[in-house]
Length: 187
Image 1: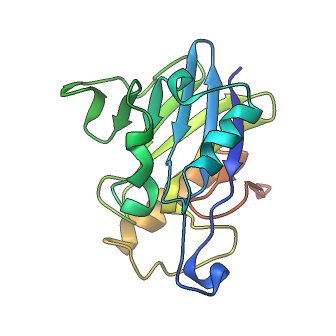
Image 2 (image 1 turned 180 degrees about the horizontal axis):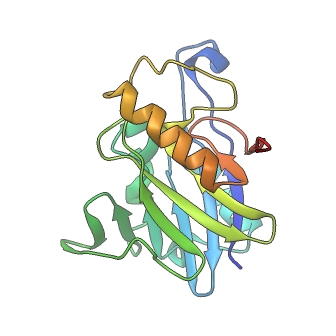
């Protein structure tokens, strides 16, 4: 099973009160993969370096950076990881080359398209010992936040993406908040 850990909990402009925001930055470990999801727009990159150090990792240990969608608050710090490949909507990038990859990235990590907030939105479904964790960027900003996403490019597709994530996941790591449990409705 893969391991998932939030390194830095994201926040919104409404949370900060001073117009600042940052995405939730997550670490995934799966066999030889050490993946950072959405490296954010931190005021000080040392924050992320220190969080990696707590996990006994360095910048050079990270071999994949995954971007949930192409909004700068989720990807600005991607350059911190010059040795890592980048996994995003169009494929897996190694320096200036890109290759397609299957939706089933590893036995325990699956990528699904979840458009609506943006056309290029992706979610990772990660099998862990707690169940399936969906790392979904701004499909959900945080628990019980912005039922109507004013930044959504397609609100109907966003509704469909949210429904799909809720059906597949046991836990959700949203774009700007702490992980929350999916409350499954009984049939």
